[in-house]
Image 1 (tube, rainbow, N blue to C red):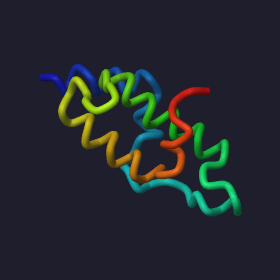
Image 2 (cartoon, rainbow, N blue to C red):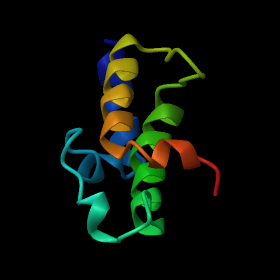
Image 3 (spheres, one colour):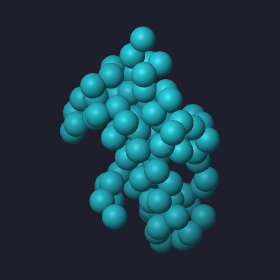
Length: 88
């Protein structure tokens, strides 16, 4: 019931295609010396920040339990980009 309510929102927000699965990211090391290049940070904001908004996540919890684990997986994938956060 709760999953069905969020899934259409995620797809409508354009997250469906971009947010395939954690671990399916481009190599961050492709740009030497930059841990989180701008292009990768934009992907982070689209995927992680978009999901956090859709799932109503706070600093430590999400309104929907499955979102917390999903977001955590993506944050591990994007590692250095988490330090840059969701701000523009």
